[in-house]
Structure formats: structure tokens, C-alpha cells
Length: 626
Image (cartoon, rainbow, N blue to C red):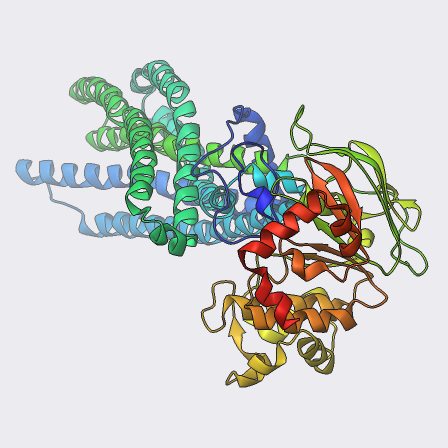
């Protein structure tokens, strides 16, 4: 798969590989999404839980009602104390402690009930947001399974992980805080306005005069901060991409003494994230002192008008105390919305990125019929033409007929199109011109799932998931019995080293497991392919990671396991394909020669040149062992 290495020249999808596998920190520039559209789609997710949301709104409203009622009751206590104090000074009486006690009991009860309703709505809202996060992560995971291969070439692994981790977490946390805050603020605004009007209309008007100016300031700052929060999410994805790529390939990084360059890359992107975060947070937090200033102006107006009203006997002093509390609480919802606007901006920016992923064009669903009957495995390439990028052709005019059950080797220099040919055969991409047929049937008329069920693959880059050795071998055939697993391991020459492990086939390993060598991992992937017992077997440099002796053993095992099965073998070690029925020699996307090993050597052409160059540089040891 060496032709996939130079990805900066022509992006080409890769099979599953370790590490980040992409441009460091690079991110395809995305056109900003519509804010309102993202909000509308997010609300659709939330609205799936209408009943819990109804309870959240109800409990929030009830909590606000009891909380808003408290200041007026507290004003009655203030009035009671004031009257008692004045009576004591005049000698006509004192404070009625019984009446004051009743007022304070009612006040405590109001606060307690308000707190209980607030706790209930918080508990329900947390359940809603966690369910939202669950569904978003599930939708993203399912979406990734339906995306074409080229999508993963345009994104680093770290960026894709960022969708599932950072972006979803930002959305759930933002919704948890923002939705509750908006409901509470709206209920508080209505309740406080009603209570203020019931106390004094003139002072209420003084408070309301500040609102237009506050709204103008908030809308202006939101307009400035919205693009900054979008940019911050994008920069965060870049940082994640660098971290995932560097730490996933730590061995290579240190082997090439790339630590300083890696640190420099991270510092550059981290600084960019710092700058955009600092700017966005500063502008977002700028609303708080501005809103406090507007609130203080309103407070001064209320204090002056209240003092005048008390002096002329129009209001009781307790009512002034209540109204001042309400005026402060009236500005709180606006201040809270201003403070949560930062979180809301981050939430929408993250939601836009998530929905941008969910809107990516999927691999087309085939409406074609499933495979019927027994597939023999004959393959025909008819004038195939293909390129990953417009104007850059990788396969020019490829034609070949492969008999069922034959072994075909595909050889050629790096970048000649060998692996690309296999991707076209498995419909990771569709040909742009010409056709590929299996048993005379165009593969574009087959369902992808049915087509790929015909294949087994062993790649140059091993891939093992976290689980037991037995589970990894059963990856392509989960229903296989333990006896079948052991038979496949023995056929792939993997049984000896597996049996030496303390837990044998139950040994837990993963992609980065150090309990087995790279060559032993390759043996497991070969056993996995053998267990699936495919009609067509693809070996892409399958023995490149094993030593010479093991390679010879695997070759002998393959001789029996390849019988009655169409096999495509991509190899750079030409000595390993001498027994193939046909060898396709590719150069710059075309077949320049084909035939058996002996026939091609007799031609003394391009294949002979490749073979002799390898023979001169160290292939003799394999020939001697064989």
C-alpha cells in the first residue's frame, strides 16, 4: 500500500491504519452553516422528549412562581418590623412577633418549595441532555459507517474523534445549562414584571426603559462573537488532530527525532486556539459589566422614585424593599441570558459541526438485487479508467480477464495503481469509465454488502481491535465455532505462538498490544481471512511484516488454502509470486505486461528488470529456502 504514502500530492483513501494518518492538523475549510438552521435541528432532537420537557417547563415555572412570591412576603415582614419599631418609639406598641413569625414561616416555605421544584426540573433536564448526547454519538457513529472512503482521507482521525467527544459534550453541556436558564429566565421575567406592576406602575416603567438599550447591546455583541465561537471549535479540532496523530505514532515520531517539530506544530495550533478563545471569551464576557451598568441605572431610578413615594405616603416602606428586590431580579434574566450567550454560541458552533458531519454525502445505497446462486469468482476488468482527483488519472485503460480459482499477482512500482485496483474491485470507489464484472455481472449492479461478502482481505498494515485473539480471528465470521477458529489459526501458522501464550486464544490484545510481535499480528489477520473462507481472496503485501522463515511457511500454507479460490496478490517481493497463474505488471495505471513468471522473464521486459533488480539486492535467500 505504498502508493498511499504520498498523500499531499493526491489524496487517496487508505485502509484502516494506525495513528492519525492524515495531514497534521489540517482541516478542510468549511463554509459556515446557518445558525438558525442548526438551532432548529437541535430543537428537533430535544423535542423528541416532549413529556419530560413539559415537566421541566412546568417545574421551572412553579419554582419561579414560589421564588418570585417571596420578596413581596419579605416586604410584609419589613413593614411589620418598621411599624413595630415606630410604635415602640411612640410608646403605642411594639413588634408583633406572632405575625412576624407567620410571615417568616410562609417565606421559608416558599423558598423550600421553590428549591424542590428547581431540583426536580434540573434532574429531568440532565436526563434529557444525556439522552441527547447518547443519540448524537449514536447517529455520528452510524453516519461514519455509511460515509465513503474518501471522507476519511479528507479528515484526520483526531478531527473525527472531536465530533464524538468535544462537539457532542459541548452541545449537551450547553443545552443542559442554556435551555434551563432560558425557561427559568422567561418565567422569572414574566413573574417579576407582574409583581412590579402590582406594586407601582411608575417605577415599573422606569425599569422597562432600560430594556431597549440592553437588548441593543446584547444583539450587537452576539453578532460579533458568533463567528469567533465557530472559529474556536474549528481550532479545537485542529489541536485534537495533532494530539491524536502524534501520540498514536509516538514510536515513529521518536525514531525520527521529530519531537521538536511536533512540539512546534502543537504550540502553533495551541496558540491559535488560545488567541481565538481569549478574544471570543472577552467579547462574550463584555456583556456582563455592560448589563450591570444598565441595571444600576435602573436601580438608582427606582430608589429615587421609591423614596419619594414613601415620603408622600403613597407606598409602604416594605413595598419599596420588595420592589427593589424585584428590580434587581428583573435584570437578572437579561444578565443570565447575556452570560449564557457564550455557552450558547459554543453550543451552536459545535452543533453546526455535528450536523455538518451528519449532512455529508453518504455512500449511495444500492437498490440492486442481492447476490444469487453460487459465485465462481471470475473477474473481468474492461477498459477501466479512474482518478481520485479531477484531471489526475490513476488507472488509465485497464483490461484483464481473471479465470475463477486462479491466482493473479499484481506487481509494479510505487504509485502504479495496484491497491487502487483492489479498491475499485471492492467498490470502495466506482470506476469512472469502463466496468468491472464478477461472473459476467457488473459489480455496480450488486449491493455493496453482498459484493464485499465475497472477499477476504489481508493488508500490509495489520488491524486488531481490543478483545481476545479468538474474537479477532472471528471478526469476519462471528458465528464460527472454537474448532473453526483453531483450524484457521493452524492453517495460517499462527497456532504455535498462540498456544504458547498463558491464556491461549483467550488472550486479550489490541491494535497497540505489545504481547505479540508485528509478524504474529499479521498471522492473526491471515487466519481471520482464512476463517471467513471467501470466494475471492486479496493479499496486499500480506507477508511483508514477517521474517523470511515465517514467510516461507505462510507461502506453503497458502498453496493449499488458495485452491479453488480466486486470489489477487499485491506484492513487491517478486520471488513470492513465482507460482501465480498470471502476473499483471502495471506501470502508470496501465498493464504493460502479463503472463506467468517464466513467460515474463523470457520477454526480458519491465518485469524482468524489476525481478532482476530485487534478485541482485537480497532475494536469493528466499529462493534458496524455497
